Amino acid sequence: MYELGLLDQFLKQPHQEVRELRAVVNGQVVPIADFTKLPTRCKFIAFMPQWDFLNFLATRAKEFPDFQLLMQHEVIDLTFDHQRVTGVRVKTPRGELEIRADLVIGADGRHSIIQTRAGLERQDFGVPIDALWMRISKKQGDPKQSFGFFERGKLLVLLDRGDY
Image (tube, rainbow, N blue to C red; front, side, top):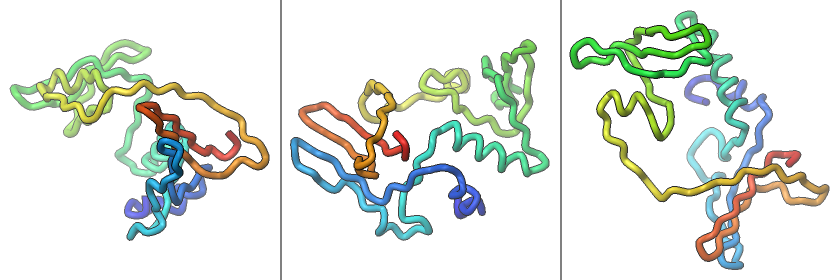
């Protein structure tokens, strides 16, 4: 954010700053990461809900005259000129249309149509994990930190969101 010139505006958004991570591993509290020692402008990780972060980026990007954000557009195919990708076909609330682009970025998840149609081979890193997200209310004296609990192949992560 600093290198993009957006840091000051970004830090005005509601977020939580995590300067260190600790975990309980088999009953022992251990430090996992200390971000205060990083050679960066901000010595912390900023947590905010993904939708707030994306809204922030979209708002800043709209300041560029050539930027266009299309919402509710699902990529259903790539378009080609011989071997070169020239754009995408999308499904919208008003029907299908073709969008030509010099650059196409596939950000459509694990089962990417873009990746498949472009003939790119997917590489899996790590192991599959199921996540159950829940909101737990905080009490007055609860610590203000994110924490992880690891024991015999099981994991529980608490992310401090300020009020929950």
